[in-house]
Length: 300
Image (cartoon, rainbow, N blue to C red; front, side, top):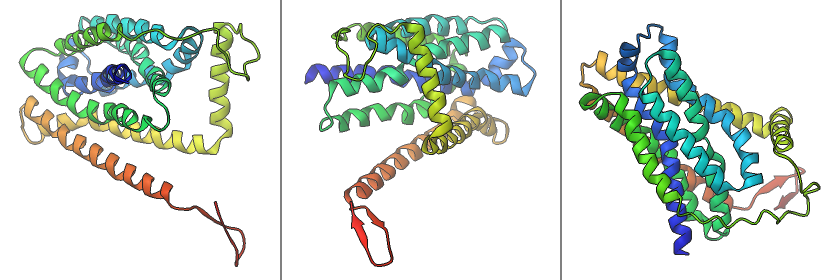
C-alpha cells in the first residue's frame, strides 16, 4: 500500500505542474510583451491562452498511445517533451517562437490529464480511492493561485525567462522521481469486448477521435458539461490574464504584491470544492424518487 501512495503522490506532484505552468506566466505578460515587442493585445493574451489549445488536443492522441504502449512510458516521454519545449520557451526571441514552444509544451503537459486518473484507478480499489482522488483534485485548485503568486515574485526579482527555467527544473526533479514508478502492465491482457487485439496506433487514434466527436454530437450531458467547462476555463484564464494587471495599473501595487491577490482565488477554489463535495455526498446518500403519476412514487 505504501508504494501505491508513493506513486499517487508523485503523480499528483507531476499533475500540479500542468495548471501551475500557465499561471506563472500570467503576471509576466506585460514584461514578455515588452521584451518580445508584442504590441497587439490579442497576441499578448495568446501567449497565455495558447497553452489551453494543447491541453485540449493532446489527450486525443496520448490516450490511445497509453492504451497501446502503457501509461508509464507515455508519461515519461511526454514529460521529456514538455521539459525540452518549456525550456526552449524561456529562451524564445520573438513572438512566433514563444507561441510555438508554448503550444508544443502544453501537448506534453496534457499527458497528466489522461494518465494520472488511469494510474490512480489501477492502484486503488473503489473503496480506497477517495483520498487518492482528493489528492488528485488538489492540483487544479492550488496550481493556478500558487503559480501566479510565484510567477509574480520570480518576474520581479529575477526575470520572466526564469519562470520557464524554474518550472523545467522542478519538472526534471519530478521526472527523476517518476522513473521510480514500476512498469507492471501486461500488454497481452485484453477485455472480452476487444475484438481486434492487434489494433494499430493509427486505428486507435481514429477510433478515439471518432468516439469523442460522436459523444459530443449525440450525448446531451456531454454537450452541457462541455459548454460549462468551456465557459469556466475561459472565465478563469481571462481572470488570470487581467487580474494582476488590474492591481498594478489601477492600484499601483508592485508586481510581487499584486500577485498575492491570487491567493483569494485559491481560497475560493478550496471552499467551493469542500462545499460541492459535501453537497454531492448528501445527495448521493438520499433516496432518489421518480414520480410516475399523481399518486405513486418509486424509490430507486
